[in-house]
Length: 293
Ligand code: GUN
Image (tube, rainbow, N blue to C red; front, side, top):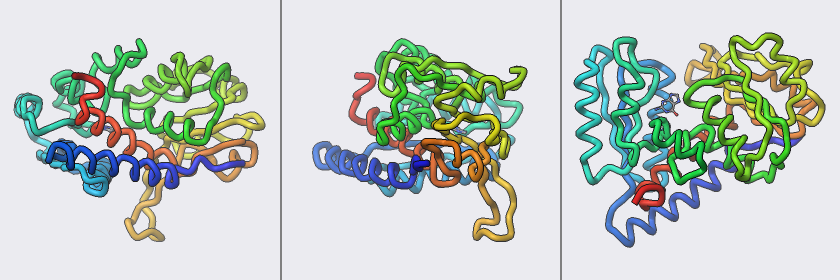
């Protein structure tokens, strides 16, 4: 078994991103600028947004955090997005999900100017990604492709099974793995909550990407020898043994599945760190006008 080491790859790519940001600063006098909008105080969202802001600073980006209490109206939030869209100093806008129930996430996603949509969630970016045109690619799937590329994991002609069909991970991941790109060119199966006998499919997977949000969902009896496993799970449980008071668990029973896998991501230290890289690379690409002129 070999580790797909998110810490190693993310640190390496962060170095490259920092160099590119320094070049922009030297040439234009400005830094790439990401604005993150956070509504309410969801524990997971607080952690993820704080990490995004911290990493922006670490690579020499400017970042701004816009906070609202969970009773903010949809109208006010949409108004703020409209204001951020027209601010020429801003390269990327993200609105952290999930949002409170009274706010329609689709409306918010579509309100963000697709040219600043560094989460890659806007229908224009999703459509362009599917057509293999320049676009912002959702950060987690993007980070996973960067990790597979870094380790030279062969994907062409393989059977990739994606477990989970969310807008943020499973759905875009399945598109990327089926595209005529590297990584890509897989035969892709998507399994979800209405798939009977998921094991039938996972047992045939050469590459297994799991984003279902259930601790230890994938067990050793569900995979074949030599499988490549990418665990997107971020299941937080309270813990008395960690400094933060939380412990993170993946969707895969790492201890036993790793005995059969050729490559596998750990949790923590795997995909989560690569998500940040996807976001930073999209923001950099926006600042460089690489996706949209
Ligand atoms: N919630 C979970 N993952 C993400 C992400 O990548 N972007 C945003 N905006 N919200 C999320």
